[in-house]
Length: 88
Image 1 (cartoon, rainbow, N blue to C red):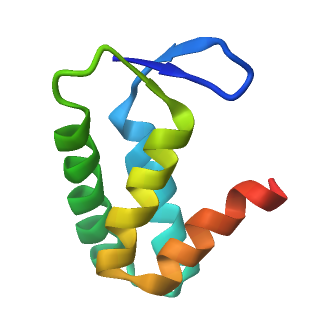
Image 2: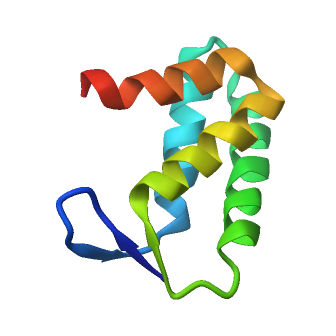
């Protein structure tokens, strides 16, 4: 799967990037590593399921999917995930 970034270039999808960003958001929401790992795995699997059959997808779509799935598991971590992009 190719991810079309905001500037228009393509990048190969890497599930590790999804996992790491969710994991860090969970840690920043004061979860221990075990809870952060559990949530990151669930969210990553949900994103992979959403992307099945797609050849290209916009980065913003992945961002929204991650935020939506993460919010089901932890609203604070989802908020941190969504707002992190605004300040980085």
